[in-house]
Length: 422
Image (cartoon, rainbow, N blue to C red):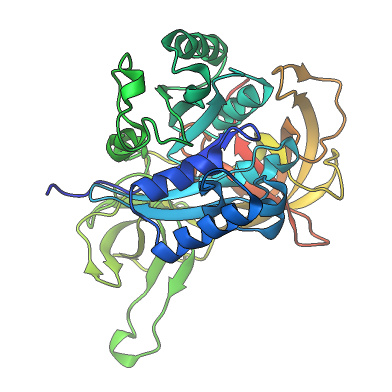
């Protein structure tokens, strides 16, 4: 058996009743990743509801309200493994009123599965979800044309939907798009190849998920290490130890590398890279490590370790796309929030709402004066202290932030930093 490749985080999105939960249930069932008692429970519930088949969607719809209404409300995370790879699934809601939940689930995904009903083709919600996937910078996209059994597995219908989506996707920032004809209910092209689609020469869904290459998606050029915690052990044998703990956001780090610390601008070299399992010769995303430096440099939580000749410019003026997530209030200019960027928190004011983006038509409404729940817009912010940010399209970790309401301590928005126009 070959070496296991990097785990894959993927999100499933699509319109209501497109079969997302059924698809995940089918993946878990056909890859033998569920227990017998789980299957027996699903069979019993399906029988009690009078279903003519075992409703595999019940494997993922965990909330009682979801089961009663037959919809997905919150993001459901599921884990399964095959001999080739480990998987983390985020099952995202399709309803427009749960856009914020979908953004949360897809924001850390390596790949997104967008389900399209073969009978309906590319609909408004398909366009909306694909736009959000593009904005969130998800590197890989799989269009699952589901319910092919209801269109007699017609190749012409599959090609028509592929052409529809390809025409629309030309307006988006999408790089790797794969189309697969499936039937989640019957299992066609999920784990095993379907005899009903002998015209389809591509991979099954599971094979594609097992083999899609995501290691190159990490930014290994720009060293970015936000300091989360300073380690000063109290045990006497370690009294000289000072380690800086955090998660590598980008780049490769090795002992002996010259580094700079922001905001002070002080430089030093990496003395060691430590983990609970011992020292490392190299650290890369998304490893969590502790770094020691050759010199005694004043460093605290929120500082950024980077390279002297490759570092983000400290800035107090931020341009960003923002997704508003608060149901009790709207985003209005001149409001002050706590902005949390990597491990650094600063106060910030929204100085201008440039436009509100219509996520159905992609129209930019420059007359808009506020953002309501689930709306997305381009804003300008002014921070009270500098932050060290990259463009979100270059680095999702150092290019994103959240806004926190100072009176309630609730997260009210997620932001994607844009250092260029558009």
